[in-house]
Image (cartoon, rainbow, N blue to C red; front, top):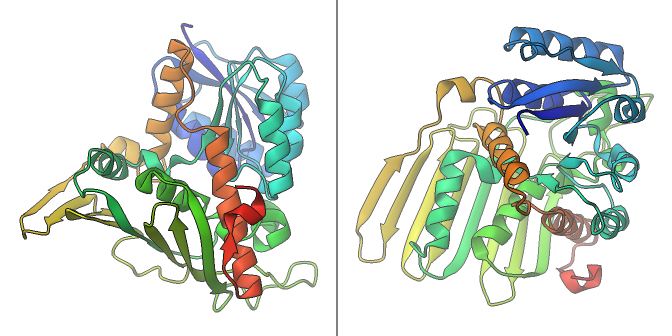
Length: 361
């Protein structure tokens, strides 16, 4: 393929981030946008022009409905960057085609929908790529490589901390309610459950969580309804061979020096990474120390809110398309990350440990 032709469904925050990053990549172009709301469609037009414009000779087509886009346009890849609760229906329209699909996280808001999509996707001709892009932040990618290479030894204890700002305002405020998002530990934290499974290289078997809505959105009302989205919590995950991981989420910690901090302790060393500092440190049990910085080019940092992850995710997706290889981030990864988030919410609601076998895993 001389050019990889992208269609994007949804031009909210993540849709715009995809546009900006694709515009940086030679051999890829956005040729169509499907967005039912006029204001986000205008955002997409402005973003395309401001960040390099459509590729030379390309006229971008705009649609109110994604089905019209699919019928009218010659596409290679479709990105689904719409509200979580719409993913199931949109995916049903895409599966069975030969299009490659990049599905923004989470796969769906319920396990039932995730499993239905997973089953249908097994017969899909194109790549189905899950947008769990945190693994593509360059410092995290290096951290993952070092963990897999055994720098820390056999993984025993993993800590992932995200201390950040509250949920942003989204079109029609859809992200203020669990019924639309799947809950914070599905919507936001599927990234971290994905990282847990990658780093521990093991099967999650038990989940215990404690969380709630303590600070954010409590004085907001939408159609007379108060938001019910959680803004903090802890989740402990036990793995099959004895390792364990903990997630520490706080969404009213804007003043943090680093938004994400990951620490892995194995039987040989402790391995740490921090974002956005981009520093990795290794401290062995014999007290040897190493610390270095993993840079990200400023032009890539400037076009996204995920420390370069979206750009590098697209580079790898395009390589898989061109080489005909399997997706690196699979639909199975998407299903498991949602299932772990659902288990966390069941645990928080019931005050009990949840076995992953209760959910069929």
